[in-house]
Amino acid sequence: MVTVPRLVVAGTHSGVGKTSVTLGLMAALKKRGLIVQGFKVGPDYIDTGHHTAVTGRPARNLDPWLMSPKQAIGSFVRASTGADIAIVEGVMGLFDGGGSSGKESSTAQIADLIRAPIVLVVDAAGSARSIGALVHGFNTFDEACSLGGVIFNRVGSLGHYQLVKEAVEKEAGVRSLGCLSPRETIRIPERQLGLAAQVGGGLYQELGCMMEDGLDLDGLLALAASAPSLPKAPPLPKGSRRVSLAVAKDQVFCCYYQDNLDLLESQGAQIEYFSPLHDKGLPPGAEGLYIGGGRLELHGEDLSANRAMHEAISQAAAQGMPIYAEDGGLVYLCRKMMGTDGKDYPGVGLIPARACFGEKLAALGYVEPVARRDSLLLRQGQRVRGHEFRYSYLVPEEDPFPYAYDLPGGRTEGYVHGKLLASQIHIHFAHNPQLAANFLAACRGLE
Image 1: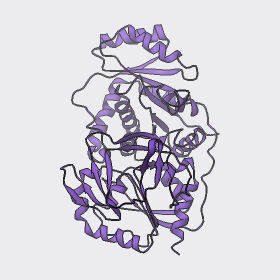
Image 2 (image 1 turned 180 degrees about the vertical axis):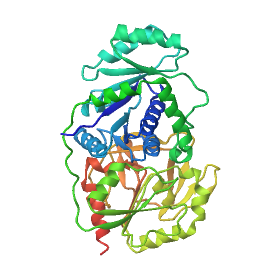
Image 3 (image 1 turned 180 degrees about the horizontal axis):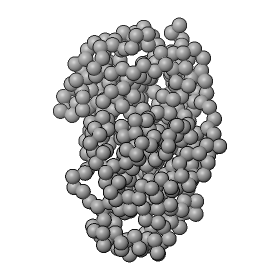
């Protein structure tokens, strides 16, 4: 059994302040000298980027649909090894999820799976005793998810705090763990991929000071320590010969499921990070290439200017190097990619298509793509699980176009040609670890 002090920071709804509280707690606890491990419920990359920046440890996504309930628990236990406390940021409202039960991949489900105390963030603006009814409902709605405490956000005054604190503690029987007042000077900027690299430590430190001033940190630590032990996580599958795997990572390409990288490493990948934005070539000796996601439309001109990198990737592809690209990675490999200025910029040119961007989301949500043909990861007809979050769409410049996947509703998606697989879907390898093994087997085929 493994002892992992832990808390789940949940909310009554989206926009209530979960991210600010989570980041502030992480910063305040790190300031105390604690080793903090961050997690995010669901597939969101933005918040995990912030968590990693604050704690200095790679954050993980906990998603029982993309992975499985058992794998989510295993990921939590493995990633928490060596940490003094784990902080899990919830998604939407506490009970918001999907599936037939309505709770799949919800914050409540994760809290139940990892047996973690729940701290509910409540927006107190414009409320008094009625908050007691709200918290009472959240505390009794699901018998598997009782609340460990409440944090009140947007409290107007000390008198206001006393009103809501008394209502919750007396009427709902839930402990108050402090409050936060509105501060116009503290705002998390527009949510976008790669944002954590741009924010820097000043915002996190200021949020940490807010938590020190307004919350009962000792009470939160005691609540975290009350969590029961969890079973040890099974080891990740092992691979054979080591493979040098080049992974694109910089302020543009920053969106990966950390569990994917963990699986690749456990199965033999020696990951060598490089920057498509700044470097002039791939890491020496690379046998495979993995290009993740990011907001490429923000950097089209700079990426297109690095022709040396374009040529290095094109040459590697011509020599048979296996290449797997996701989301922004697919955009980067196209012949053309649109910038935020509406202009087209040259891409690497491996995919005969133009990548365009709209102001509205082109796709958002979970998907189960079915392979149209054999590829690096899959055999024709095999099904995987993934998630889409993109403003981009492709305009093929050749017909027929070798799409990678069939999707519900008659949609087609992705690109397969030789040892290149590119897709705008983020696939989670943990749901089927054979995906990582297949990718590395293709890389070893270069021997």
